[in-house]
Every structure is written in C-alpha cells, then in structure tokens.
Image (cartoon, rainbow, N blue to C red):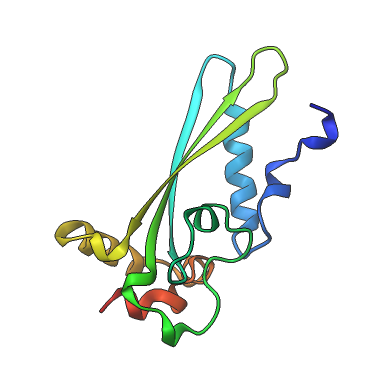
Amino acid sequence: MAREDWCSSREVRRPGALQQQLDSDDTRYFSRLTASNNMERSSYFVQVTRPAESLESILFHPGPFNTGDASTVGLENIILRCERQTFRRLPRSGAVLFTVKTAITPLASLTGEKREALASEVKSWPADTAAYKGRDFWGEAASR
C-alpha cells in the first residue's frame, strides 16, 4: 500500500467540539502501544435511522448521525451503536493497525436494567458530550 493511502486518526475523525480531547486520548493510547500488547476501548452512540434503511447505510454512515426533523423521530427508529475499537502496533513497520467491531441494537429492544442504565448515563452527560452525541435530537423520543 502506498504511503498516501494512509491517514492519521486526526484525518479520520470529523471536526467537533471534543476534537482536542480525542486527539489527547489518541496520543496517550499510541504512546503506550508496543508490538507485544494490544489496546482496546469501547464507545457507543445513539443513532436515528430512516424507515427501511439498509444495514450498509447504517454501518457506513459518512455524515452526522442525527440530523433532520426531531419531531418525526420515533423509538422504532433509534438504535444503540456500540463499537469495540482495537489498536495494535505492527512489529516490522511500527504502524498502528486500528480495527472496529460494531454492534447495533434497536433501543426499543432494551429492557429493564439496561434501558434504565443507559437513560441514567445519558442524563449525566455534560452539555458538550450531549451535543456531540446528538441527545437533543433523539432524547425526547428515547425517554418515552
């Protein structure tokens, strides 16, 4: 693969309010990464889908997750998108291999403790995190 096909994590991420924190987190991860260990982190997003949207469109979503008219968002269109991200430094090249495994769960299928735990966490987000994750867009529908 030619060098121009590679990009930094800064280039992969879209600009946002948390960019400086994300860059700091990446630097911390990468500075401790060696060829003999792997690192892993998990994150999640709440994503609003369109009726009958394809799995490919949901997984490979190039733009912001939550846009449009919030009044049309129903619980049946909200999914919890959980990502397991792994990092491994390759021994010969020193490059970092970054992989992502994504699991998608309809929010309506969460029951009892899981739904309550998510609701509690979402309510505790600071304003910048809530804005980044789109809580104002899907929050009302998710709390019904």
